[in-house]
Length: 424
Image (cartoon, rainbow, N blue to C red):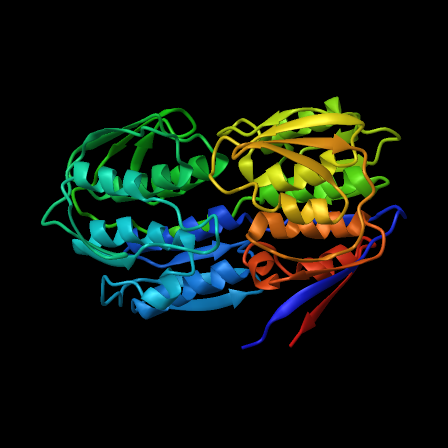
């Protein structure tokens, strides 16, 4: 098995030019899962070439689905030869998004068998909220260790309230409800752009969904009738865009982030403006430069449209260069601050307050170190830290970063980052 790492030399020279944002990982993976609800073929466009997408395609192929690559970032998915309801455990255990395939399989075939999804230290999280929703629709659930079997003769619409907002659970239950008998109402639902985009595609394919983008979504089920297929064009990755913007705020000079949607990042961009960052925005671009002084601004992560949790770790790197103390409050995930010890080893001054809050004191001079990516987002945060550090850093476990970011080394080199991949 090949093992890759990134070697990054830090510098203070300005990053210039432009860098394009890829299609959103969290949108493309749902686009692949939703094909299981279709009787016709689905064309997926602007699909990021990342490890999570490759694993999701392998899951579909193991189910008997025909997956054809029709372009650099395009696929044709044909589910007419779908032959089973059991996900490949070896693949599904490495992919958090594998749970998104369970609902469509249950709705289409009346059963789904899958392991507890994984992916990284953040990925293996409880799935009780998914199971509660499927039970409310009439599914029976058997658990054997870390594996689950869902089965039903018929799914029925229900009135279901999420006790916590979850965009993946919202999408999973929305997809399941599309083929159910009767009306489903999802309350306290997530409002993320990916939820809105998925609902719009489902409606184009023949579903009847109202309220996507609000906290109450209503789905009138088709009674088992499959949808018609169509074209699913992945929206820009707002997490990748935000990460590039932070890099520009630390080392950029008129650095252009293109092919993005600034409207999906309004709270994040407002936070950077309060910190003194120079930003210009257009319909699908952001131009960013490092300010002379970065001011400390506290951040509390929140569901959309709040400050997205996936940008918390890059923002902590940004806060190490701010003047003053920044309080970072992670409200969404347990264990999402487990990377701070490595940043402190690089010279940061980050004080844990409790499992969900840290105080970042700045500005501090970061120095190159060898670190390991614990998850997708913290891995890219380490690359950003290494790009502004003195000396050379090595970021091991590049696979975690490759799960979410397409050819990140080549793209960052194009704007001036000294980064190279080493494979053994």
